[in-house]
Image (cartoon, rainbow, N blue to C red; front, top):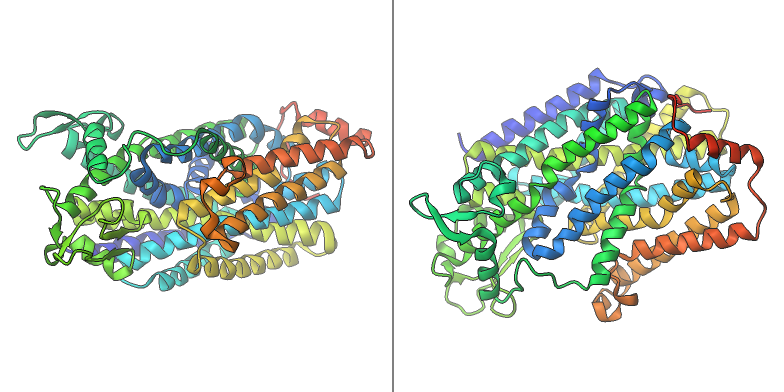
Length: 572
């Protein structure tokens, strides 16, 4: 059975599983729609959190970034992993103790202000839409190759699937669907990594193969280490050494910081800690999620290197002089049909050649590396199909979580808690589903017209979260003196500064998006950390010259800081 048929079968079976779970776990109340009833087991929630957090950026794009940029790609690994530790230790137990449905709910009550709640809703929606654009793009990339449709059609198909189980099941359906998606994606990611590690280095664990010697044709150690070979190939082709970075230290610091603090401010991840029954369960859930996340994140650098070496040797040939395009492997011709690989025969010799600079004839989209690796390395057809299913699981799981944030922000925080306080539970649920449906349409548009490759778009979303929501949440937990005026001014200042900077370099004047023109040498991907500092500074300054925090609110903050007890999630 060929890879195409297997792909249809495996992807079809996984989609059927997701939709079946959505029907089985259909939400019947707002509590089930928003926080899955508040009774999810910590291990189950940890697995769902891992799937929610490990989006298409992690599964599809991150290994591609590390594969193409080498050491520079480590900022994403450090930022996203460190950010989850920060979220788990610094914020999750305290927010669970507060016992609300959403981040805007927390901010609105903590800062005793409907205006603060509304600003938080705007921030949450802004972050979520930016993030989901990357996910929908990931869905389109997967479908475009493995279901042999164009990228736009792939996005439309993904929209329909997400609409069904996110709108129908709410958080309850999404939670149990994400458990299934985690199992699919981690198996799909680890299988090719283990295959390649054994084939190239003899090690079963890719993490060990990453630093090991390559095997020769006879299966013995060749005396050449994998990373040394890649460094040599890179310099021969005009690239910087794979293990050396080209980014400035300040940009590395700011990108890592923006990703870390952005992770700790992501509404769709934070809401996961409201689905467990107690503070103790929230801590346990965070620990399990970190374990599940670490399995993939410690494997990504190894898979990136395996893929890079194979890609260079496949395109340039054993002699390094190029392979005739007429004899190109099937994976290249397949991806050329999608437009994600392009060949330009500059010297007219009929051969493909991949290098850095004017001699390069191959334009290879970095988002395809993980998806193309099984074909590239001649792995079994079922592995190719499995990776396709894993890529879709990664993109769809996070898309669903983000859509839930958008729908709850509109129905619960904006309508129920602000504009329409007397609507019924049934009416609120209807508005939530309507908001999710509209959200899918908008997300689909950005998936078809993305502002960049998947991981870069996602990195921008993290920067927006760091500059807007993280300071308000942190000060809300740890500062009894931060008042509503300070929090509101800080959120507006941080989000505005970061958004304007990103829009200028990414959309208004992308030609100027080079290090010489950046403020303090900070790229748009890292500017969120500076925006966060602006937020803190403005909030502190405004808070000093405005009215003090009411005594009952100060007592509430004091109670939050001692996370004992369950604090059942509630909507009052």
